[in-house]
Image (cartoon, rainbow, N blue to C red):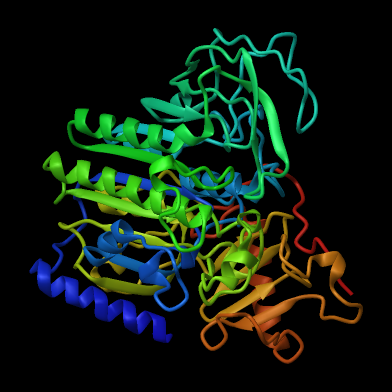
Length: 515
């Protein structure tokens, strides 16, 4: 266990003693409310209690939530970028089983979720839950285009019937209610959507930067009163409003737009951190999380509400990571890489849970989990089974909440990068089928020197910073992990059950080729 984790444990135990809360109860068969808060591009090291020695951003609300519940120190997204991770969370299935083999969707993209597939929301709805998604969707939806669907990834002169009905969006995927935006805040259209309708019309043209330096402005259709700086507070306000109206049980999937670019802290948050606008935006994100948690508590729902706070991937290079490091802040903490990469900085994320009826306060789990595990965990909590054709890459981490080992039929966890490169993690071993980062960090695949190994192998227990490549010296480990990875891909699932079909016939594991 690294030194940082010792500090975390000491801090959490101190708060545990102060609160005087007791051991958790048996969990199976309970029906907690579930509030799942997904930050956008929040790095593992951006949360102060996870990175006390190399973090410069105050995050008191997330720190308090961790002290009242449990921290998972080895939680991973199913991909190191937005859309694929969101698919994995809601489907309990890896994104690369679909046609999305790399990259992300755009604001006008069609739905990635097949109409006949069960989502976490659909599963919980069938169990009697009210379900809502509030915030950034970024999984595609079928918009009411005029004169047909526009062509290309970034179409110009898109014509939309702003009074038309949106199909195959969140309310068609198991959510009773939706309020938010189609994709990221640097992807048009810039207009709110409520359920299956636009809120107003996008009669203006606006643009917001995809870099903290104001570069690469993404211009497109926007409603006249839409401003990027207002979106995060609006998501918080709508979430608070929703929770106050609910009867139990309910599932609120809250997808924040921060601290993703455009990095636009509100006026009252500007200058609040030591490291500039990004730090300010993280602090505002933390405050919004605090508002949501406080609303749960004020509504008398604290004891039986499971709150999860996590992120869709690591911090983005467009936040100017190098500048932050010069100021003493390391968004990936002790990990190598950042958003888009196969290295852990790309996909190991904060994962904090609070559930007074189900979790011992001030606890920590170092067991490896994946964000695809929400679906199986929900089923386990409710004491029911998932259909065999759903949650094929999902494993319940419920035992970890009581300090017990996770019982898994999944041999390992598959990581995936922006460029579609694969990695496989089992225990302490991690095999990367890439020569470099597999993403945006240097060296990218094309920049790796000639004669370098075709892949990478790391001992994550002794080398969490992924500095010593053991690929050439541990051929038996490489072969074993490669066989497991291939089997999980070919079987259409990584958990026990009948073989299933991927949505695509062939999946290329070696994007950079083999020698």
